[in-house]
Structures are given as C-alpha cells and as structure tokens.
Amino acid sequence: MSVFTRSRKSALAGVVALAGASALVLAGCAGGGTGGETSAPPTEERDLTLKIGTILPQTGSLSFLGPPEEAGVGLAAKHVNDYADTTGLTMDDIVWGDSGDTDNKAYATTIQTLISEGVTAAIGAASSGVTKLFLDDAVAAGIIVFSPANTSLDFTNWDDDGLYWRTAPSDKLQGEVLGNLVAEDGRENVAVLYLNDSYGTGLNEVFQETFTGAGGTIVEEQSYNTGDTSFDAQVSALLASNPDAIVLITFDEIFTIGPALLQAGYPAEDLYFVDGNLKNFGADDKWPAELSLEGAKGTTPAGPATPEDFQAELNEWWTGEGNSELTDFSYANESYDAVILLALASLAANSTDAADVAGKLVEVSGGGDGGGEKCDTYDACADIILGGGVADYDGYSGPITFDEVGDPTEATVGVFQYQDDNSFVRIDI
Image 1 (cartoon, rainbow, N blue to C red):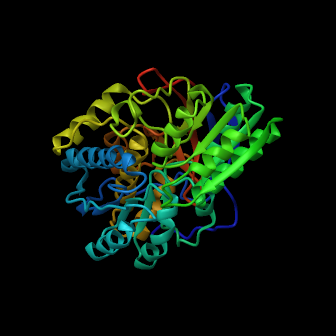
Image 2 (image 1 turned 90 degrees about the horizontal axis):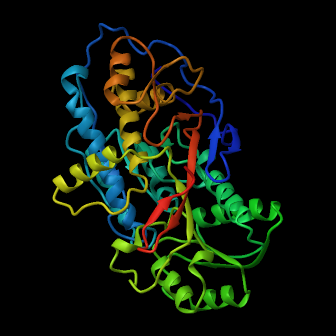
Image 3 (image 1 turned 180 degrees about the vertical axis):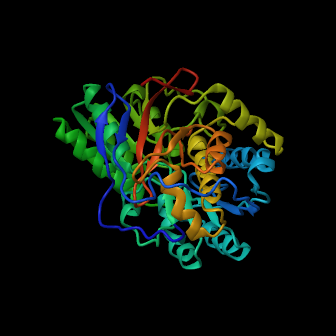
C-alpha cells in the first residue's frame, strides 16, 4: 500500500511478561499492516537512492549516546550500500546533524536542514523531550522521524500521520523492569530523583506504580529541570529520608549528582540507574576515578546479547571516520535496526517517498497479519523482497514487530551492574 494512516486509539499493544527475574519482554500481536501480501513482483527492478539524515546528540546532556547511535546508522548504511549491486538501492550522503538538548536547542537548526535537504527520514532524536519539539515540523514537511531511543509514553498517541516510529520500547517496559528489580532486591524504602520532563516523569510514574504495587514505599521524591546545575537541595532531601535505595532518573546531570551522593557516604550498591545515565564511567574523564560505583545497578533497553563481532564492526566503522574507539554501545543496536528497516521498507515499496516507505514498515518488521519470512540480515531480507516475498526482519535490538502506531511490540530491557573499574556488565542473561 502506498499510504499508511495510523489510528491512535489504542495504547501499546501486547502482553508484558517478566523473563526470569530481570529482563522484561513485551510480546504481542500487532494490528494493521499488510500481513503476508507480496511486496512486489520478483521481476520488478529497483533504482532507488534513499536519503536519510540524523538528529542525534553530538552535544548536550545525552551526548554520550551520540557516538554509538551514529555508529549504528553509519554501519547500517554501509551494509545497505555493500549490497546495492543486487538490490538497486543505495543510501549515500547521510546528512549528519546534532539534536543537542532542550537547553541548547541544536535540534531547531538541524531539523530545518534535514527538511531543506529533502530527506526521506530523520533518525533521532535520542531525547523524547527533544523529539517533541521538532516532530510536528517534520510531520508537516512529510518526512519520517525514526527514533532509536525515544521511550516516552506520549508518542503512542501522537498525531503524526503515520510518520513517527521507534525501535526503543516505551517507558512502560523499563519502568516495570526497574520497579521489579528494586523490589526483588529486597528494597523497601526508596527515594527517587527524576528529570522533570516527559521522559523522567513518565518513567518515574511507572517505576513507582510497579514498586509500590510490589509492597515498597517511596520515602522521598525529588525532581529537577533541564539546565539545572545545582542539586544540593535535592541530594540533601534524598539523604535525609534515610532510604535503603535511591533511584536516579537523569541524563548527564549524573556527573554532579552521583559524586555528591558517594562523597556524602551513600553506598554505591544502593544506587539504581536508567538508560539516560547508564554509561561506562570508567572511560570518562568527567567521573572522579577515586569514586567507585561497584555494585550499583541499572536498566536500559538492550535486546538480546550483542555479538562481539557486531560491536567490533561498529568500532571499525566509527574509528574509520576518524573517531576514537567507542566506550558505550547504548542504542547502537536500535539505531542500526532503524536504518535497516527503512531500507527494507523502501525496497518493499519500490519507492523513497516517505509515505510509501512508512506504509511498509509494519510489514518488514513482521507486524500486521504476519506471514512474513524470518530473516536477520539486510542481505537475506532484501533477497526475500526481491524474490517477491514478504520479509520479517529480526535485528540486533530484537524482533521489533511494529504495531499500528509504530511502537515495537517485542522488546527487552536488560539489567546491568557496575564493576570495580566503573564499567558495567549485563547480569540478566
């Protein structure tokens, strides 16, 4: 189908189930889409140039997510171009752009650049709060916005003409994983510090609902706003409540908040992090080397275990562009899969028109009525489409399987723990 109009009447489809005692998996049946219909006759040739851009954090409070996300985009585009002689689809000249954050507002310039460049899709932003500030402009211009990291619940019901998609699951999943994790760790009296934006408030709400539903008590709740630089009052209030654990729902403000808590004598093993601040502090000069986070835990959308050879490929591409090696891989998988899905949808539609491509995203993810043939590489999926079949891509971020509103219905949130060198390892698999 050439035009895909999404109904925004229902929330995230699916049934939430706890995998073991840690990773939360959302799996369900997606509605809409094209199901098992043939994408195109096998004799139909393609001569397509799919132009995309990025609006990812090169600066701002989530800048640590920029390198792995851009690496995921770049490597996916390389894989698409490596198979272009077979498919007839190329993805050249990516328009790279900075999203910044809601404070420095770099997104405002970038989105206008992407619109003027005539991209089919913009990959980004990482921050839900940032995406909200440019999404309507992108929709009005008729370009797809495909975020690898937006988790806000608000996007499920956004009026986006079917042009907004994400490979990251909503905060409903992470909030439930976090709440269950803290409860299963035997915590009873917990304090929370959260960023007062759509991401922080949404994740905090789901966490608290899950944790208190499991019998826990919230003894203190503090918030702060984007751009704040002093957190003395919040830290004092948290410590005064004498909690047996503190949940920190922040972005890069963690570089001030975390050391303040540790220097005040709060035990690292009683701290819980989230995707907005879970990073390899051992490789970051901004974190005081003498302050150990050993024992602290955190959650983030993670998908299945990432193969080492894939991370090596990401690093090879990234360093090949003149950058130093990646120290974090958060949302690299989701960024890679976003680009691959766009390319497959373009092949299936035999078009680079944004509405046409959007109209095939449910199909190539295995959504709709199902019936597609499973495949886990771009080449294999492309061959299915070129042969007249329906591809069902399962990527590095998981099966994905979009519902009718562009949310993944199959996703995993992983649990991680900090080691003595302030790096973290996954502990739920």
